[in-house]
Image (cartoon, rainbow over all chains, first blue to last red):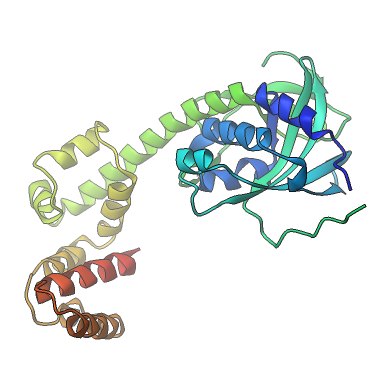
Length: 126
Length: 191
């Protein structure tokens, strides 16, 4: 099962800082772990930029108001990110996102970003 | 952000910057109102807010200012309440703070979330807490659990202490061990 949005495009957009955090599950929970919105945004950019295909879990649709499909990843964070944000106790992060377009081109919309709340699903092999 | 764009969330509305002072979670504060209005890209249909890099920095500036104001306000209220029982200097001495530190906290020149929380807790019952802090720092070997009047908690402290006393053949002071347990217990109780 492949992600709905090409991971290289997602990474490129996040690396350029073309990323938005939306909703309490992307915006508020992370503040338990990092200091303030700017750090949350920097952390999100770094986290999404570090996504790999093997971290992909599934593609889901959400209830209103969210339209479109969202890719779910569970991503281990690098030791550099762990030490920068003091997250040694939270090695894995759940990320739900979709790729959209803005005036600059691709942009990542992150609707969930928090430690996993349940075990990762086994990816189905094609 | 000054441009408008189609909402990537509902795919129906338009996202425009909207000035707001709506309270939101920030650091350790559950809901904090920004010190000034911040323009947050908001959809006119689903009303979701999008936090991009610039918005994040603007929010931090306004919320950090609000946090400083809140902290100074809480500290002032707590110290004024504590001063009804003992002088600021007496509290400073009891809490191991340098002379004038509480005044610097009151003026907002110093800030500490931990200290603000502790002072606020102490200020809820200043007279009783003065006596409790005295018991904590009494430095006697007789079980301070009795002095602290928390029997259930004291029993745990005492048994833990005896375990440590038996387990340790080092020369650590018995009263040091006991006091450290009591300090932890008291602050847990207060929290």
